[in-house]
Image (cartoon, rainbow, N blue to C red; front, top):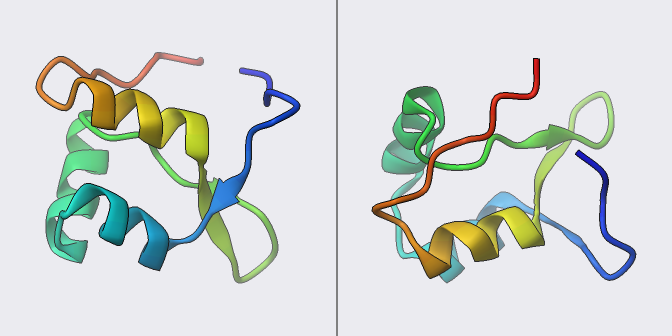
Length: 69
């Protein structure tokens, strides 16, 4: 998966505000593959691609994480 030139990395607080999910629900959905997984941005930091979160917001019921193995 490549990052689009206009894509941003957003942090947890922004993801929670944009989706309305609680932290525990967000991480449960990641484990289930029904929400985009975060990406590592430093040793102690992680974030989400804004485009991936936008895809989930557009279709939260139909979203399935892409298998990138």
